[in-house]
Image 1 (spheres, rainbow, N blue to C red):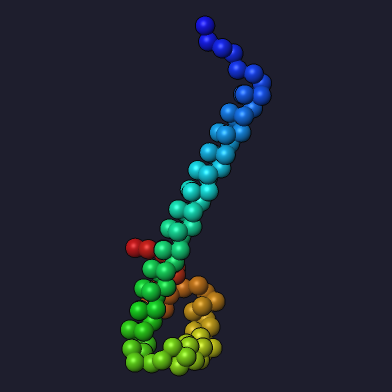
Image 2: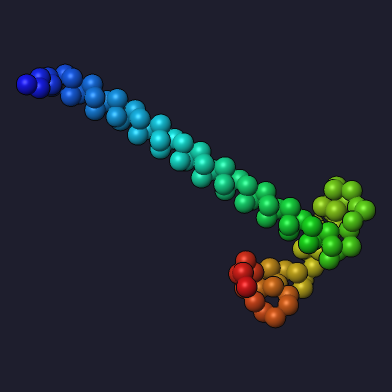
Amino acid sequence: MAERKTDEQKLQELQKRMEQLKEQEKAIKARANKKARSERTRRLIENGALAEKYLQAENIAPADFEKLLSRLVRTEQAKNILSENKSPVGGEEIGQKE
């Protein structure tokens, strides 16, 4: 006949299971964070490449490119576009995918 588990044995099993679940939770969070970092990196690279392309800044040093962007975003037209959260072409919302 099967032996009954004591309350202490049951408690130890539950604690072991809780530790396993915590490890699983930690692994899932780590995967989600890695995915978010990867997506952010991709977006930064793509946006940077587009900015470089449209500003014709292929041969500009990063510090000079930053100065250029800083000057551009301070223009009235840029301020209006940014405050409306609209793209300059077609009045589409920025960040929307087609």
